[in-house]
Length: 242
Length: 242
DNA sequence: CCAAAAGTGTTAATGCTACACCCATGG
DNA sequence: CCATGGGTGTAGCATTAACACTTTTGG
Image (tube, rainbow over all chains, first blue to last red; front, side):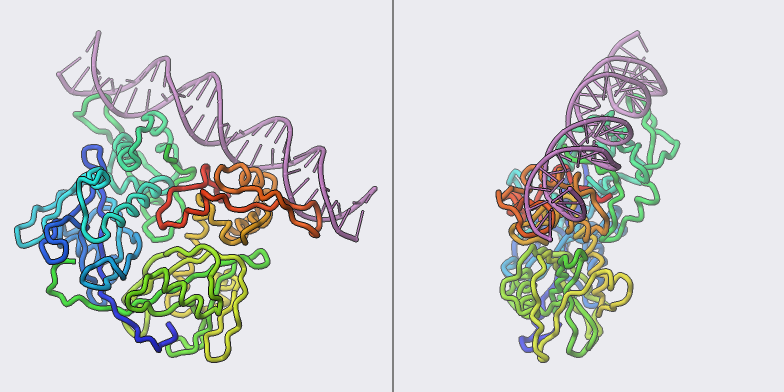
């Protein structure tokens, strides 16, 4: 921070959140319909301005909560990267710090007309060009998707898409949705259960479903704590995309 | 960017650069000695304020050039992540966007007394606690190290530490320095040369060195273009840390 | 010829893919 | 007892780690 001659410019800083979940075996992203000035009526990532003295992660969680009506956001939140400032907001130089949320399929409150309307949209519709996003949010979404895909390979974060307890098949559905591939159920089962420090058997099973009941698993403690921005690979060997 | 009621705070934004290189088989980081107010006399990462209308990556390159005296920075520059704002700068809320430079061992101009003095320092000295860094720069360095380590596994970026042409042994020295391990020269050779779209033989060899001359390689074109923030793994299968 | 570093061959262990097969439940 | 999905076994193939060995230079 030296060289003080050029006046240190000050920038408005926003946080945006790419919230991903798996619904009906498809990857979905949380989008809001903008009600105000730039890109009014268009779809955009939820987000908003960082307040003075506020932590980035806190701001991301707060904005998400405000716009979905959910107090406690479930899942795994991490920083994705920063974009801008120049040329991404018609109002001027705005720096945005994008975040990535991997979450179970939580219900979004259909807010009243005075708030932004938030809803889940299949990612495929954005990729197909059926849905256009405001600002540079499509680029941010692309980066988020790539990050999510690669995270599943070497981290236990697929479980962040599931609830506290889940079956191997549900976990496999996450991989299949995010990677957009089919995986062999038998081999996936072995690899998931055979990976050390990944899953623990709760001893309980599903009931009432068709077919044989599936064992319920929980994330291992060692895997739970991999919450820091930089944490060493837990999945060893990694699960690789075909 | 909705909910305009809380006045959008404006933040000074800085870019910091973690420049890493390999010198004498050890990983080194570029640090400056601060000449001004906060943490005066302490070591810090090179960096400075982003100017209005300036791109983040451009700002990082500019600051690095200003503080090292080198016009064209060689190597691979990418964004690492953003830190703050609260509680990291005694002067107030400052947001910093950290960057990571993987570069060959380029000479740093010992600047005159009116500029910050930049020099390479062994990373091990920082890790051992022999060197203390200003602000939260030690944390940023830690994140950078983890990023660099994991990048070597699945990307061809180890070559960014070498010049345009290099031997397999030089490339191996990079892996050994960054990962702080020893690798079997024979197996490494096969893996590096056998990985598709990674290295191309220039047909030329080293001369004058002790022992058998080594073949000189260059990064393959396909690997060169993996400059985007999100680019699919090129090294397949990855080189894994022992 | 010797030392030193580059590069190749070989083998045993491991891991992965594909698929046959059995298990446990609901209807 | 049949359909449906959960879960296990296994054979063939690919990859790896460890190390013996050959090659090519300088002294």
